[in-house]
Image (tube, rainbow, N blue to C red; front, side):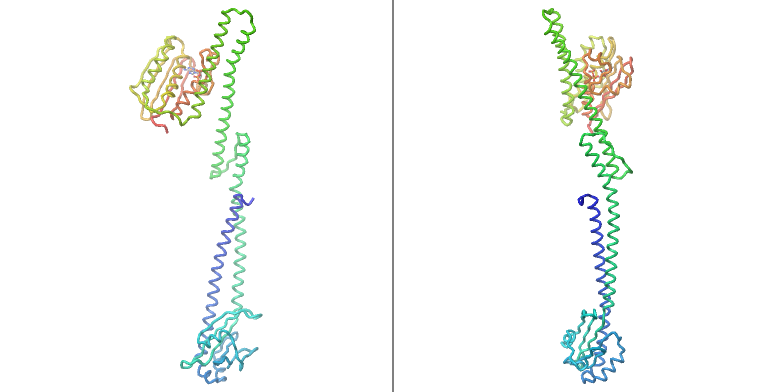
Length: 467
Ligand code: ADP
């Protein structure tokens, strides 16, 4: 659970906020602490130095009364304890009401330091009384050490104030972290919920239900992901439907000649003393069906190869004008048989970088159809033109034509308008599918315009450059 995007986002945000708040708090507290204690330290040392300067002569003489008068006259804050000692740490004067050290030896680290000639300030925690700041400065008279002034004051109030600020900062940090945590959880849910939904739908798809759609809201990155998924799912369903249709059509097309062969062969086997002329006729029919089977399988193989070898077209510079002339020559016996007039209007020496076999196959299939589906004495016109983008081959017949609604379907595999008639003409319904695949491999397209009873016009476009 903690590895989900939602939790990772929440934890990351909360850690960032906690780190930021704790660094800011530490910095602010350090600054406040330094400022407050520095002020107190300067004040104590200044007072101690004033006392040391004024009392030096009387400390040297150990004149306790004058020292007391001077210190009292200075009106030092009541909260500050002032102690004046001689060089032996014997207390000459002490303002303390309880635990007064006057006449006794007062040993403190700060006093020892001052007796060694150095000013010293320390903060100490004293049981029950709390935090204190102690300062000691040496008293000198004409360069000679004569005693020490020691001042001590409570800084517990400052410590309490800093402690209060620290507690407030910790509370604020926790409240802010909880708020950021809740906000980021909301944000993370808004991001991860659609992703989780999409994952569920993709799992469904992986289980075989290809037609899956997700609900899309808005136009952000997640919505675009949803839209892309919906498009992909639609395309996959279409492809799957086409594949199913193709397999069912292919099995049907292969089954028809196989059934005829089976029936003819069984008749031959079951009938005794069959007339030789009938036997020949049956065998010739079987032969015809075998030819048909091999035509279908050859074309299927060609289509399958084109499906899988998209990147394996063998490009070379071809002369399209010469290629069309060759195709017309090879189809002229068929045209002559039906007295169909082939009219050529070709630009000279049109060259193109293309796979010659595939382009040959495309033009051949379309021209072959135009002759096949045009009545005797008809006409088929072939034109070749060019422009800056590529070349255009137009094949126009005045044959049987077709309704425009059929024109969109004739490039589908195994699609034939009149199945019985097409079978008579040896059609498989694969010729135009092969032609279109070949042209599309070159980045081109084939369009058709047709009118029933008037004829059809096929236009092949092949670009100079495949984009
Ligand atoms: P077939 O092998 O059956 O000709 P095609 O894929 O080449 O298969 O053509 C598909 C169908 O398109 C044909 O069965 C025919 O009905 C129709 N067709 C193709 N070319 C023409 C045309 N020039 N005139 C009329 N119909 C055509």
